[in-house]
Image (tube, rainbow, N blue to C red; front, side):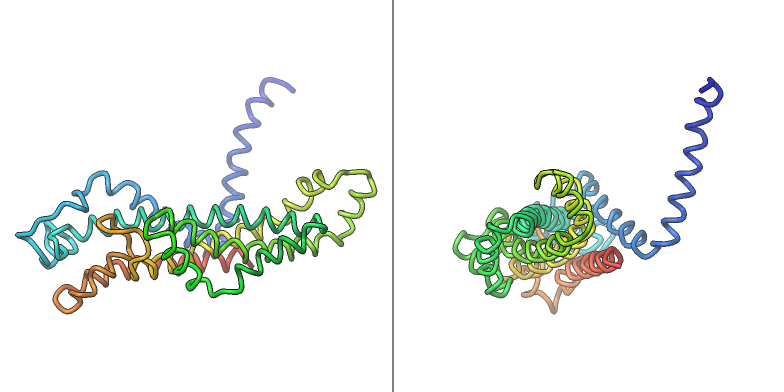
Length: 283
């Protein structure tokens, strides 16, 4: 290859990549829009707490103030800035939802892959997963949170436990359907070992389904986190989360409705955007 050809190769690859990205945007505009808005929300809850007032700083003189230039969403019953608490609470709520879904998706995917591909282990692993599915998720999460005590770690463990079995079941079903495909039979006939078949053929064909499970579980995690925090079984105050902000504000719903409306309006669009993204990925 001449020097001119090597110099032109990167230049031509950039417009091609840009054109490919534009085609993807046109074909997946709803998915791109939902992920774009979610990215803005995540960026806001990560960056804004660095410049906003301390969300846990009380100011008893300025309790339950209405929105103003100094306090965009007013203050709560301790005089704390609601806007600061909303943004900081978003960091905790979204961070916990992300941690739970990643942990549960990894654990459930591993169980599903092993159970579906290594059949001698299938019965034992699925009976264990069925035990977790025997109880309604929110009831099991509440029971585990009560036993372990309120807090971020207990909620993380509880939500991971209830999400793992459903992911394992879905992934196992996908692996079982792949096991009968011709390319798997050809790989076995060529002498390829089970581990190599799993890594080279099964996992790549299962990843899209795993990604869908990850997004959908994130939406469920946010809803259950809000419910547990509302019941006092999630992250304990004064650390703000959207759920415990609603729990603290319910006593002042008449005098200061923003204490409930603000975190509620934060949860709803995040859950809706995650569900939209999950539906688009599923298609």
